[in-house]
Length: 275
Image (cartoon, rainbow, N blue to C red):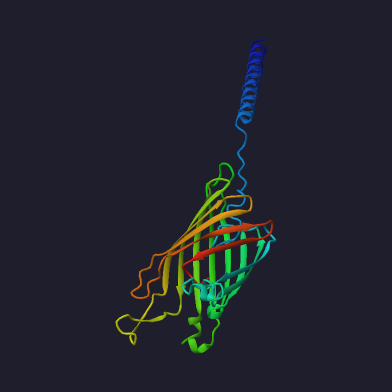
C-alpha cells in the first residue's frame, strides 16, 4: 500500500510537470510569434545598382554583374583643351583608346582583358565582391578586391629585359549606397612596375634618375542621380608615394552619366590622358 501511494504521487508530479512545461513552451511560442509579427525579418539581400557600371570614369567600381554577364567596354580619351579651336578643344587631337571585355563565370567574380593604344598595353584583370551591402541589416558597405596584370607589347628595343614589360595593380574598394540617388566609393591601391623609368632631371637633362617601382594611391568616386537615366559623376585620385623626380599629380574628373537598360555612357573632363 505504501509503494502504491508513492507511485501515484510520483506520477501525478510528472503529469503536472509536463503540463507546466507545455504551458510555458506554448507561451514562449506565442510570444515569439507576436515578436516576429511586430519585427519582421530584415531584407539582407544585396542592394541594387550602387553604381550603374563596372567603370566610373578612371576607376573600376565595386559592382560585379550577375553570373553569366558578358560586357564590352570602349574607353576613349580625347586630347587636351589647350589648343582651343585649332583641334576643337581636343576633340580632333590624338586620342588614347582602350577596348575591353568582361565576363562573370560565377557569382561575385568578374574576369576581363583589354588592349590600350598607348604603349600597346594588354591587361588582364579579376574582380571579386568580398562583401555586399545589404538592403536592411547585414553588411553596411560593399567591399571588392581588384587585381590587374599588364604587359607592354611594344618592340623589344624599349626594354632591357622581357620582364620589364610587366606591371601589376591591386586595389581594395569600399562603397556605400547612401540613398536611392547617392553613392560613394573609396579605394586604396598599390601599383608595381618591373621597369624603373629613367626621367631627365630639371638641373641637367643629360642626367636621369629612376622612378620608384611601387606606387601607393587613393581614389574617391561619387555619383548622384538627377533623373531615372542621368547622373552627375565625380572622382579624385591621390598619389601617395613621394618620388624624387616626376612626382605624379592628383587627378580630378567630373562629368555626366547616361544609362539605358543595357548601356552606360559617361562623358567627363579629367587631368589624366592615360587609361
